[in-house]
Length: 238
Image (cartoon, rainbow, N blue to C red):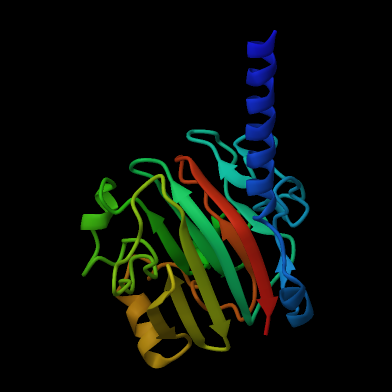
């Protein structure tokens, strides 16, 4: 009986420890609340999210698991988007991928009945750089993690390996966009300039007339068929 009691106590302590660890995530500090930050995921509910081109959250493929918003491998849930549209904002979150995982954070995307969200929305790439073939495709590494996908490479490339958490920050203020990864600014670019449209004309997005043009739109988390987890998703409108 003493042995069983000890085991039960250890399991109880372990459970409390896990719950306390999860409780430290997906929260806003008092300062963040005063500054106008909004928590887009509380660790359990999907209130701020819905499927692309749908009014409801996907029934399959996405789960709240261990305090993270997770897209399952081959889950078939599809891309999800924020219910609200954002123009100028700071978005912060943490992400981790499975081995050879691929996903992305898209922003200022618009809904089109016959086109996916990447038809209009620039993408902060999420990738296991060491094991996914996309890392060696494109030009100058512009498909590696935190890059403006297939357009501008993230420099320096400082992503953590698969299975480890990475921090991401996207700052969108008018035409100026910044990508941050693990505390470093790795991409800065200007939208809506002659150079911007010239770059698009010479890219895989040349046949996407809406790409990178909207001044506001939805933020999207991509379902690329790989398991990817997100937590501490928070946004502040500018």
